[in-house]
Image (cartoon, rainbow, N blue to C red; front, side):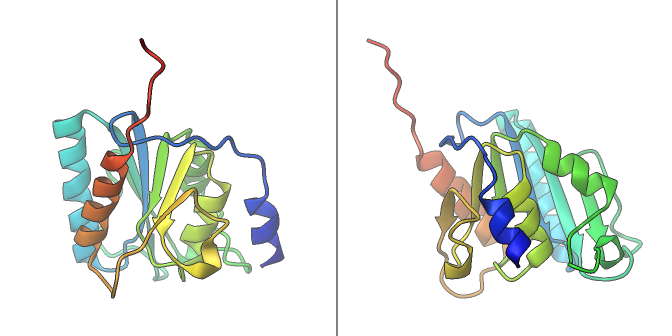
Length: 174
């Protein structure tokens, strides 16, 4: 865990960016459950068509291989347990590319106990990082969303959008 602390201290230009201002949005999620994959896929399709956002998602499938019904599509990629090193750090090229993407906003939809997704959040080149509240991850995100209980992924997506839409940046226009 020492490397997580070091990674969280890396220089990253923090800037608050709301939903309206964001052009590039990245989502991290636990894609082990096929229903969650379908929900995220549908949500991303809606964001792209309705709001004209450049959206990508990276799902972690907590299995050795991808189920046949889950396959990479434009902007929706996956990695599995076999793509993790002995420290549980993802090493797949798809993950490295996602980390290097300069997202305006990166949203981690997973609970705080999914180390590979939390690691990606910490080392991401995203400008504004959003995650679910967990007292152990205070240094990992620029904004945390607290949702009671164990909500489904659709609820987490909706709540993250609501909170991001509430961020309105003031301009110095007179």
